[in-house]
Image (cartoon, rainbow, N blue to C red; front, side, top):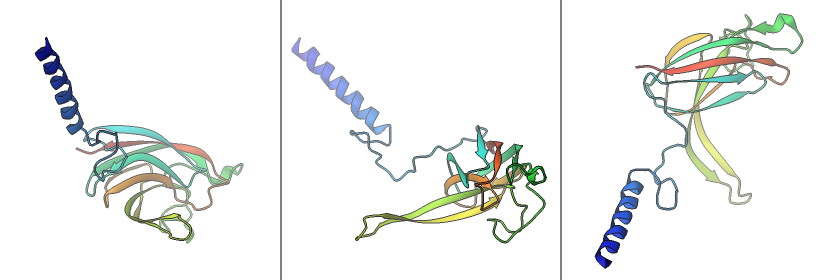
Length: 179
């Protein structure tokens, strides 16, 4: 009887140990490696999301790898000035370029993306505030674009405009991982 009990305990402990080694979390549920918390798309997998024109950047929740092929398709419409019918555009943007927008050589209001890679986090000794040292790469997407990711990092989508508070509308975007 005692041997069966010990064998059962041993089996449970072995299962827990093997289960623990099959994940990237330790016994306490903490992340054991430096892998970012986002999600990776497998080849052929896709997600759909809404990009709100009143937000500077929309977090996709996706991590990307340098050289990874992603296919973007967008539809919908936004107004670059709420209530002004002339300022309406789709994912390609409004045919106007300004020096204030993130991509100066592309239409204002066009769908754009950026990948942000965290380099380090520094803590200010006096204030205790954390400062994130990051690099980012911004790129044009428009209504449809296949693009190879420029660097490893976290993917965001946005509108090619700096002043977004007076915007309205949204774009529905499909992101598909290339094969």
